[in-house]
Image 1: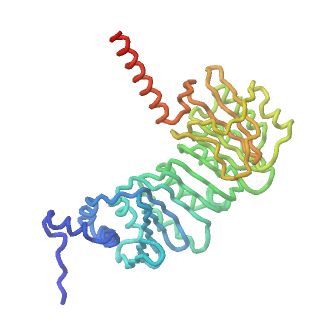
Image 2 (image 1 turned 60 degrees about the horizontal axis):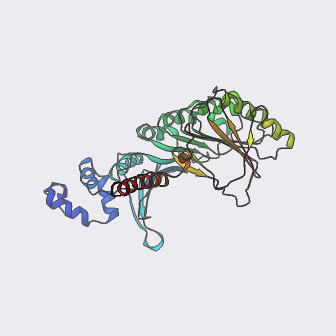
Image 3 (image 1 turned 135 degrees about the vertical axis):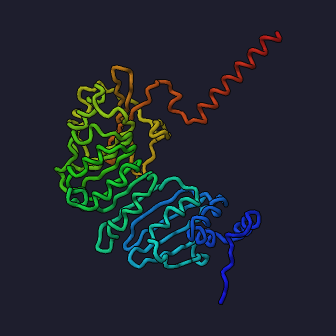
Length: 377
């Protein structure tokens, strides 16, 4: 009978060099064995770039991406109670599989987040519903423990998913409070089921409404959203609603946090509709500049379309009574963008941080240099 080697009982100064010599997959496998093992592996500082989670068929798929472009993939099978670790690509891929025993596969997400020093999930994706989609009850223990989610993605859903009778809706309520952004990508056929999303405390919201050309998001549903960035995709969007929203913004009677609004109508507007869009706004037409930048969610945003054929067709500025400005921009791809400028009208607010900092430093050096010249005259 072989006796197990008491690795974790070794003195710290002896144990750590041994752990450092282990291969990457061995370190990961060791970390999930016990809390004590995880504590020592965490000291190796294997920091990751970000982690993505996705529900796929009968498993939960976890991808851990590191700064060196390497990727660790963890497949946690719900019904088979099996865990697969995969690291490397093509012929160099290494695979470790085992059955976790009494632990559920979900119990491996948080330990791996811990040893890779990851404080949040970058994306949590719920794919298209199918008969093989994991049962929601099996997901709840994991979702309750997730500390933070940068973006929640719901793909290819049906209208039933957001209905009051759907068990999936209760699952979403668990992750809503810890999610910074939500992206509902397809097939929301009843906009009333998305009202809870608009009322949520998200930094960014993106919702697509497919189906009938007369279907639309009622203005009262999204005018008071708390999101800083709001993207709506709807073929039946009413120009009157957009015009009314811009007027509410002028009167400071809508979402005060809004920095960026994008509306995709998927249809071209006539000249009469464009006039209706700008009615009562005292809009000033501006020269079209693709290099014009805006600050959205703390980042510099510039016109950069995924469609090589997209072009800006018009650009208008509107100004509130308090001096706050916003820009309405249209494109040939039937998209309207609404940018709210920072409260400061200083043009340096639209420069990149390093450019603005360089300008300030250069100014100070010039002032110091001129004072020295005056002193020695």
